Image 1: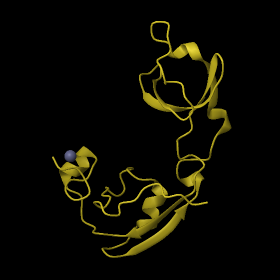
Image 2: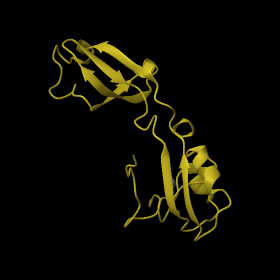
Image 3: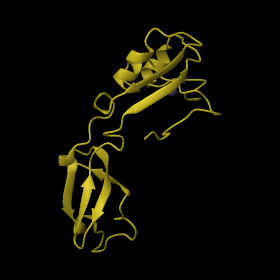
Image 4: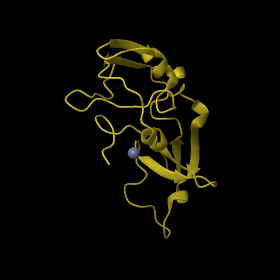
Length: 148
Ligand SMILES: [Zn+2]
């Protein structure tokens, strides 16, 4: 079963800096050496994209973990919700509510695209050298990127 996840149709092309870790390595490998106008269509297996789905990343926690002033905010713990969390080192990450019980919830720490085989098709709009400022900022300026 294929599902369209993202498209740039009718919008600006996706701009990225090659070789700096912005994209999935396997994505770059498939586009390596391409020039303006080149067409591509390739797939990337889940294991080489966002990883296989990991059953052990499904964790049951007590609901009261999410209480503020003794109450769980209305609508917070609903299946499919993404919860913004912070670990003890202060890193922000997200977990999806996978199941809600009486006093426990199951959180899914897998990447939302874990276990998903990806397929890409399109064409290369243009290729150019990255500017020093772009490398410094870690994103593309101009068409398909930031305008600031
Ligand atoms: Zn910038």
